[in-house]
Length: 142
Image (cartoon, rainbow, N blue to C red; front, side):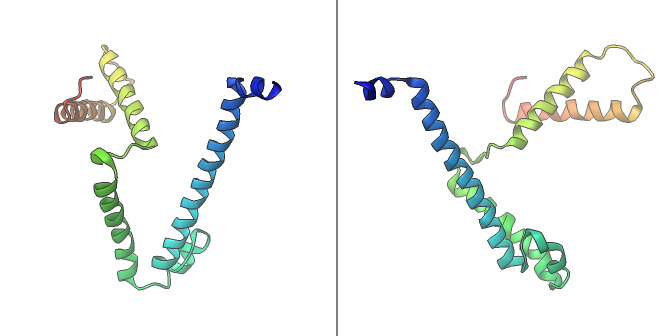
């Protein structure tokens, strides 16, 4: 009888599930970090702690091609394993937030004052232009 009452408590079940999901996510982060250290050890002969000192003794071609091969591997992974081939990441969220700020500041500023320099004004104009091209290219309405 008491076990049924505990099982029917949704908040308790969700809390227990959250612990397991959090532990799995933490384990995944640790596994990815260890994989990165392993790959750095194979290609660059060092881990994150001693990477700079170990890179100084490598041949120039290894320093040049190791990141290029890594980028190629990630590109192939995205091409073959990610549906839609558009990775969603924290960087995309930050980029979207920054673009919203540019739109808000650029479109809401109606006065021409000395507080805005020509440099900042041209960069805002460039950012708005890039945003318009981006929205046209990807058929996104802003």
